[in-house]
Image (cartoon, rainbow, N blue to C red; front, side):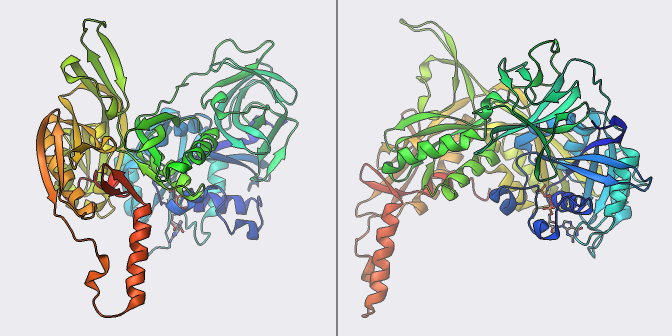
Length: 605
Ligand SMILES: Nc1nc2c(ncn2[C@@H]2O[C@H](COP(=O)(O)OP(=O)(O)OP(=O)(O)O)[C@@H](O)[C@H]2O)c(=O)[nH]1
């Protein structure tokens, strides 16, 4: 049983790449959680893709023992939080499990949008926030300027910010002292009915579903019968423990403590983030506030390039889903692509992560159809059917236009934070994407601009474009603000007069022609020439709005290497053969796999 006054629960909030994981590793190392050899890998980001992309996806926590200058030993629970807008809800639950936060700001980059969004959330949770200015070893570091930014932009006192270089190990002890002295201990009642928050859950092949919890009141013990108040299920706890960061079993978790439990749960879906855990007998009557059921917002079809791999795809998707309750899938069949799955994601990054894991970990070649948001459509009545409202996840299911009375699409509020120089191009980008500017302010040579934007204009390549026009300096954060009516139509793409359903998408009428022209032009470059002429058309209903033609070609690919180098000829033929495997036949036209997504990139507007 740990004395409450000796516990500190905190998270680290930072913009991507400001050094959160490196600092976390240093804190663990300082507290002796791991040996140097074990430290050679960053421990908190534990998925391959996380490491490669340098982003944190799943929240993790470590329990550290720190003997402070006052001679007392403290239990520090360090919570790692995901660093991307797609996972905002998980972040909010992790923050709700803490009493304070370290705000890590890069000494050379200063405050950025993601930092802001997370700090405001942290403030909402009444956290004590300790500013940490990291990377002071960099030649471009300017801690005083960053301090001023923290005060001006965020409104937090930064005089006593801790200066660190997580990379060279400077200021680490100071950070730990600040945690102990400035972040308050948790409060809780050991005698009260059990109330624990489900902070995170994941699937472990040996233990089943592992649940990360923060105990608010009462005690969690092995052998206890518990009830998940939102999920409505009951379970028997078979393990209680913590990560140091190695997994250790403990006799119990008391108020204020963070640790894990297992209860022979088979699916993460049964352990929803934000749920309240209480005892079956004499349990709490009121669940903790803040529970939300996360819903996928971006949908797309995933199809195997090789139809024979459908079963493998089904199995692989099933395995991924074991570990990720926020992603959904159901079988889908398409005239052109055969059997595949319609999948739902929290956002584009989430989509890319799943797609990449399927490709890399499960060695699948996939075709991804155009991502789509969820539209709400009011349909008028017909002779046989009453009027009704439907949700549209797939442009292929677009109803008969004559029946549509109204279409609504989801909108977001986006906050973009950028150095002045790039503001002009960013405003143009937002304007082109049907954005409505609601605010523009300048602080210390940077602009903060707020836009309302339709989500469907953001899901394709908005983030990539933003990064490229600002040379990586602009940052972006968004939240959903509900549905709004829009003049939306389905645009079909016809290749050699056949509609290709995987390329059809819902667009706003005002931008349909431009987008249609862009897609036709790109497809013209992406589809190789055939022996016959291929028309490529964009159409709304029966009306063609854009057209390109791919000229016919003579087949002999080796014709261009006259001269007798046989190995070169062979290489070309091999390449042609390989290329074939990655093509999709549409009628009698082969479309390369990469064309499906590349056609949607909106290019250098
Ligand atoms: N020069 C210098 N580089 C640092 C320091 N701390 C971290 N870095 C580097 O900055 C990069 C990003 O560090 P991470 O710790 O992965 O950043 P992060 O904030 O965890 O990133 P996310 O997981 O994406 O949120 C890495 O290349 C680190 O080596 C520092 O104190 N000085």
